[in-house]
Image (cartoon, rainbow, N blue to C red; front, side, top):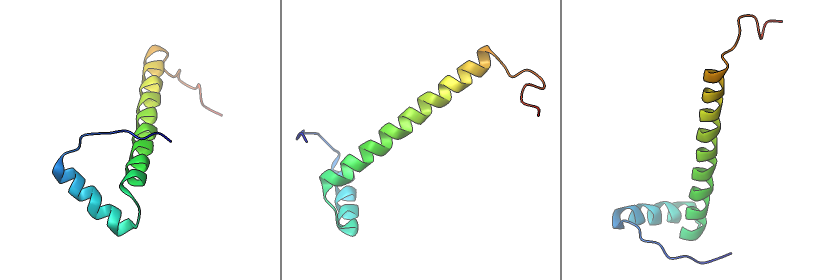
Length: 67
């Protein structure tokens, strides 16, 4: 693992510290988890955009998914 330095708003840091204490974890662990969730959400957004673009280029034909 690698250490980094970051700047964070004082109010946000206070809120993070409050939640970290409630959860019984560390700032680093909390922020790592938040970053993982944000990256996962971003991947989902990009995939959804690709799907929309794909269906815009090649719309579903009537009866295409009928059984």
